[in-house]
Image 1 (cartoon, rainbow, N blue to C red):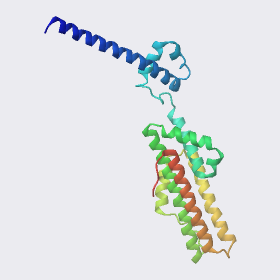
Image 2: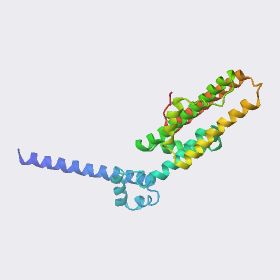
Image 3: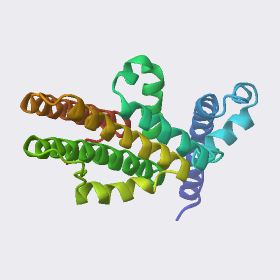
Image 4: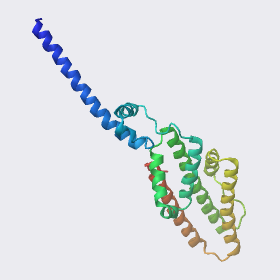
Length: 231
């Protein structure tokens, strides 16, 4: 290989390396400023005025963890309460639309582990709530024939209750149980105080409401997790 050829090769590599370095610094400056502004707003402006700081941010974005400082136990506890709040009554979405939208966006950005935990929490609560209401309808059907005080608790409801229990503290679960008991007592009062009740109409109205509640809960699930719930 001649001397001229060697010199051409050296020149080619030198020019290539120079071009790569120029592209790197252009990328580093733009990416560093963008990343600093979006992920490090407290000191993000430094990337504008101190180029090496911007270059560092451009490299740091490759290992940046949005959730590095998150107290997951506290965050998940807050999110569970928020999800339960919106599941409990569809009107809450319209009362607090911005908070609801923020909750959905936040949870959809979570790591899979935390997202799946909240997803199961919501899923089991929706299934349990629906199962309890279907038990109440069965209870009404039984009372059309003969008045009974025996609750119609299905095995499905009992199994789901155990799953739901896992996601609550003892105090929370006690309050949860009180809410269910209030529902049963309210139903008993209706059956006791209105002996001439039109069972067919009452049952039909209740079934319609149960369908609407389930549909609303499934919509919340879809909004929060961007995934449809089918059962």
